[in-house]
Length: 354
Ligand SMILES: Cc1ncc(C[n+]2csc(CCOP(=O)(O)OP(=O)(O)O)c2C)c(N)n1
Image (cartoon, rainbow, N blue to C red; front, top):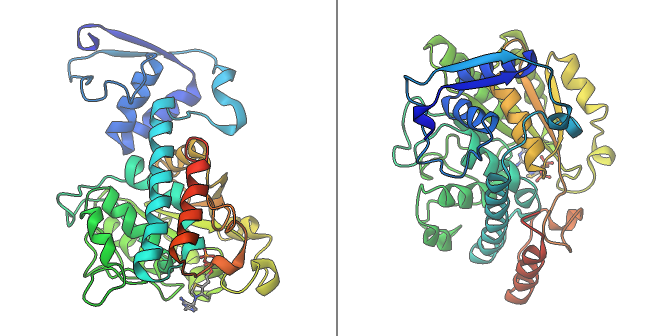
C-alpha cells in the first residue's frame, strides 16, 4: 500500500538533519526512519515494505515534537525491534555461560558486560554479509579487549557465521576458538586481539585505508576501560583526532573493573570523558545496557562528520548474573555444572533481556 501513495512527511530542521545524515550513511536506517515517521513499526512487515525509486517524499518543516526527545533519546528504536535485541542479548549471555563450561574457564565478567553492545552492532548497525565474510566493503569490528572472545565468538555464531554447535569446541585442541580471537581462524572476526592496546591503532590503519581507497565502510573498536592504561591507546586517539577519522567509532566498556581491582584504585582514569574530549573526540556517554541509548549513540556516531566519536558505555561487569555483577573475582573464572546452572537461572530471571 505504501508503494502507491505520495508521502508527505513533516519534520523540523533537526530531524531533517538526521534524515540527511541517515541518507548519507545507511539506506536501511533511512527507510526505517521514514517508516517510523509515517507511523509504521519499521521492524514489522520489514520484508514487505519497500520504498521504490518512484515514491515521492515531501519534507516540510515543523517544530520538533518534545515527546520524542525524552531522556536524550532523539529516535528510539521500535518496541518490537528493541524486544528482539533484548532477547538476543539474553541469548548471548546464556551462550557465554555455555562457553565458560565448554572451555573450562573464560573471561566471563567482561564478556557479559558487552552483550548489548555486541548485539546492537551485529544485529542492527554493522553492514555485513555473514555469507560473504570477506566482503571488501563490510563494516569492521575490532574487539580490542580480546579476552572477551567468549562474548564475541558466540555473537558471530548467532549472526550466522558458523553453527552454534561449534562453540562446544571452544578452547579445545584444534578448535578455531581460543581464549583470544584469531582472525585467521574465526570466520567473521576482523582482527586478532588479546594483547591489550592494539585494537585502536589497528582501527586507525583501517580508517586511513578506507579513506585512501575511497571506501565508505566503518570500523568499530571496542576497548576495555582498564585497557586504556596502555599508552598506545592514547597515541591512536591522537591520530584519530588529527586525521579526523570519523569512519572509526571507538567504544569503551566502562565497567570500572580490570583484572585485579577497580580502575580508579589500580590506575585512575577519571576525569575519563574529559580526557577523550581534550584529545578531540565527541564523547557520547550512555548506559551500555540500554538499547535505546546505544541505538541513538551509534546512529549519531555513524553520521559523525567533523570529529571522531567515543561511545563511553557505562556497564556492569558480569551483567545479567546476579552473583557475578560488579565483582572482580569473575574477571576470569570457571564454573562447575551447578554454578553454571545458577548463572543461567539468574539470566533467565532478567525481565525482557536486561
Ligand atoms: C598488554 C596486556 N597486558 C596485560 C594483559 C592481561 N590482561 C587481560 S585482561 C586484563 C584487564 C583488562 O581490563 P579491562 O580492559 O577493563 O577489561 P574488562 O574489565 O572489561 O574485562 C589484563 C590486564 C593483556 N591481555 N595484555
